[in-house]
Length: 220
Ligand code: G3P
Image 1 (spheres, protein in one colour):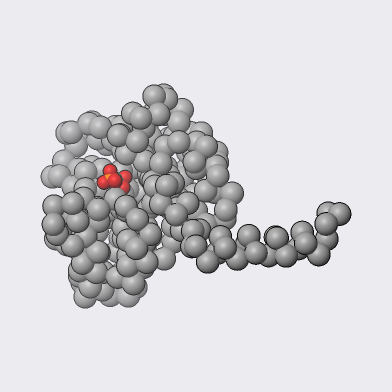
Image 2 (cartoon, rainbow, N blue to C red):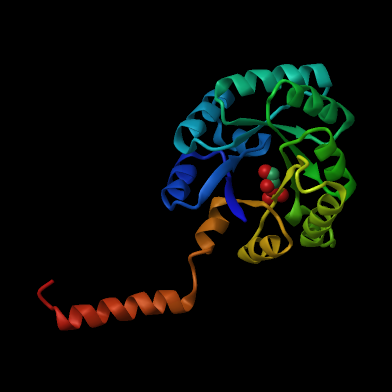
């Protein structure tokens, strides 16, 4: 499973990218609004940092306007992926942008049927929201597993199908479990990516190695 960062903050994206573990970036209107930056400029800046798929979401609600916004976003950089909501208009825009050779990420997926429709409409990615399902007492990881099974049953191995991006990731356990459920990608907030390094025995081990070294080499 690959890891994307779910952020519109350039410092976070730069730092996570420096670790060598990031294969893409996802943003959404809430994340961009938090930054207070010009949307198009921020998408360009992110594309300069990562040179990998960068999802940027449309805010129009009718298909023709979504397609126009999507085309403008795709013109910003060859790695832009147009993010669209799973609505009839969003799927129509997905089909139209796919026909133009523009990659899409269909978002706000909460059922396997929504994911199946998005894949049939040509989406390059589908984004089930794991944490938001958990928040309402449902099992977000089970949705990822169900989408994996539906895709594997519905498409021949050589047929194009969307890649699954487990989104709305809240903690490290979500990441491990998304991988085991067959997700292609997990898109994670910077705070969760940082948590992946942490283990009390790692911290204690580093402290012990360094203090042993210092004791034997007091001059260094
Ligand atoms: O970018 C979409 C998704 O990851 C949002 O997550 O934490 O707002 O549910 P969250």
